[in-house]
Image 1: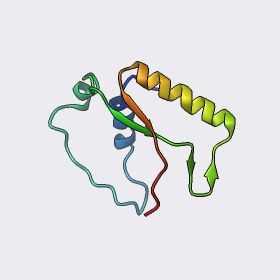
Image 2: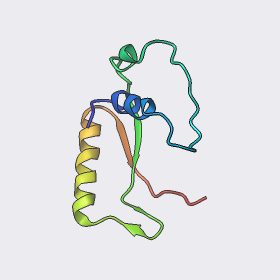
Image 3: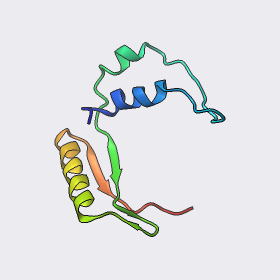
Length: 86
C-alpha cells in the first residue's frame, strides 16, 4: 500500500496498453518523479464489499475495513458505497 494514490497511479499508467487495448497517452506538465513526491491532499475514497450478486467473505471485509481506517488515519475521507449498475 502506498502513502498516497500518486505512486501506485504512476505505476499503473506507465505499464502501457495491452495488445488491442485503447490507451490514450499524455504528457504530464512536470516529470512524474516530481509529481509522486507531492502530497495529494485529502482524497475522497469509496469502498465496497458487495456489488450485484457479489458478497465478499468476512475475512475480506475485515481487511477492507482495516484499509479504510488506515486511509482515514492519513486524513482521507472514506465512504462505504454500493456500486450503481448502469
